[in-house]
Length: 270
Ligand code: SAH
Image (cartoon, rainbow, N blue to C red):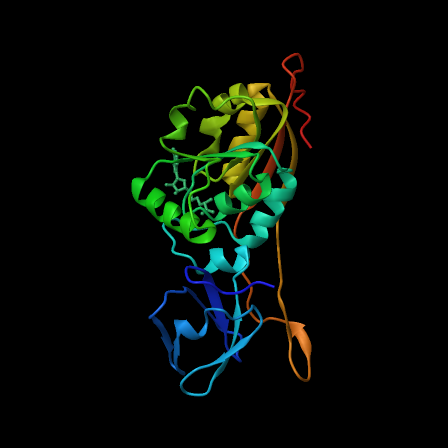
């Protein structure tokens, strides 16, 4: 059982499945087109309970999943969508205890997922060049976890200029940058042998340029390139069918593995 306490981020779901997400504060009230709900009425409820607004609208009470949270949270930079984050976690093989470097932090959608996946014994190092985006990222992280986890290092730095000296022996690296090829040299020096690099980019030209640079570096084996197409369906009273709208394109994923120093890239990339 999970009771709602003050400070929790929760969501109310109406009969049309519209979701309203906010942080519970004593004395505050949630208002929408179908009336108001005092926050005090939410405190002590369990997830899955129902509250009724002043206009008689019944609303389900849940805590948001990470996926729901990132879609509603404040954005500085454009986020990586949950469908791609899910694939990144698997293709990058993020595991509990992993040392992961990511860039750029942006709004921290991916950062949140990485933190969850590495767990308290792992480490996430995240680079972001823009101070204003980092502020948004910190607010989102704090809102989701209740604090900034100690195993997160945020670096306000241009990653193209190199990594901090201690960012070595990394297990995994996830790049969401406009010019990821500019990180290849540093990635080669800082990823452990067998480590995995995943890049997310909206344009295949970026992926192509990165693949060429990885090949030239002699330190990586390009293993896979993917795009994730996810089509939602709707279950109505009379029909079950695909939704009319979908997010048709977000980005491509490139996956490469760091080779041992004695190996050389053959150029026969898959
Ligand atoms: N993955 C993030 C979104 C990142 S958008 C999320 O899911 O929320 C790309 C980010 O990279 C932007 O915030 C941008 O400011 C940052 N960026 C661009 N060039 C950079 C550089 N050279 N060094 C560090 N960050 C950079």
